Image (cartoon, rainbow, N blue to C red; front, side, top):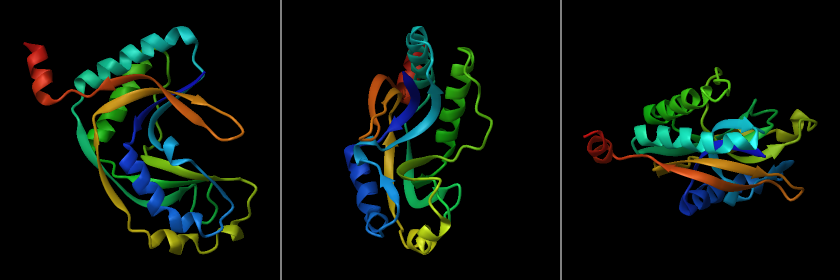
Length: 195
């Protein structure tokens, strides 16, 4: 059972990203474009932990959510990993606001006690919109840098929950289901709970 921690997007945000990426899809690039229903922001990939750990992971995420306040962030622009000239992943970027970075750090610390390694590489928040084969030659993506530079997309979203997700892999592409959802607590709730 492949699990990960994620921020899911509203249908409106998914549609906004999908519509903004239309010029990329119409460019004839050798890319497998993802169904917008799968768009999300991964905070931490957990791999295939033992099923007995799932309730403990849910409890840890509940605890993280209870200490975090809802916040807003902006999806903006497009790019690629590892490089725009030879991409493996095409993405919509996400503004790395302080609240998002703190939530990511809290998730890392919250799961470390369950035996998950803390991520030490830099956090580059993004929403994957397409994947390219590593065998595809760099020449196939000529002009992608200019195309991406012309996409001035911006969409503000409110983050109110963090979710434990399960990945279902198939030939038709991945599907994701929510195993548990933890609400981020507004400041008033956090204060009243402390009394």
